[in-house]
Image (cartoon, rainbow, N blue to C red; front, side, top):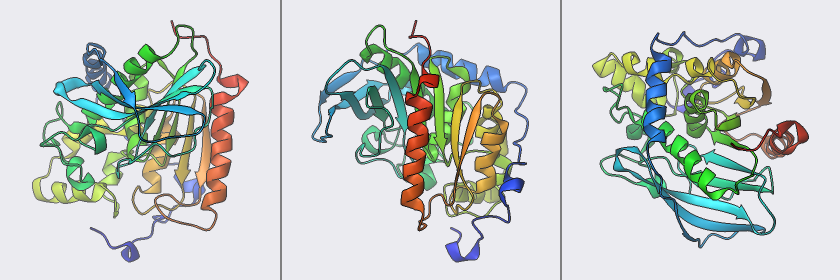
Length: 323
């Protein structure tokens, strides 16, 4: 692991330089690769199960939930519904690589249902022999492009959308996605292929520009991939299909990306490669730091929540109800 003091978390980039970073072109069969995974996920009946949660949140009814995903894996997490009134939309929310203990983060829209799954192998979705240690989780089946765990996590997201749709009223509005760090990278990989997701937010997303991820020093999950590459080689043969920046070229939904100028865990140029490649309407929220404290953090988080509320809950976010 790289010592924090030995690296520059700006990697020598200013904002202008970051806005010029573009990811590599995807392999020719990239779309076919991901479309197959999506079709496999659509074939799974999630059988969503709910029971009252010990976690309480004012104004919301909170359930512990579980649903079936691919490979016989059960996904655990939470479902939050408005205590009063009819929900107008839904969200799937993806967590970071540290996992999630409870869904205590700010919510942008009060009139929404939120599904917060733990991706396979992590937290409430523990599944041996998958490790919940990010350094090992990110390597699980990395030598098998078709079986690499990140593809399974994207399927967990898509099946989560199916599960959430079963909970929303028949004439409810859109489903959107919000993901941070690990969950941001999973979202970028998953959104291009799922037209059921109306818009998305990625916060300091990982898995962007995989060749750069393998080169830039980091204290994040990419460090273990770098060590694996040094020992075994050929990692890009898999990671080329799991490049969130390459996937972003296929995203057409409106997107709001929060990307950091300074981040020792997810190098800023790899974050901006995702934003820069987005093919549809997009908004950028620039963070001073990611995965690191700074004196302006609380104010920036407040401003970001305001931006998310406008993006997801304002009039411009309203699209026709689900078919």
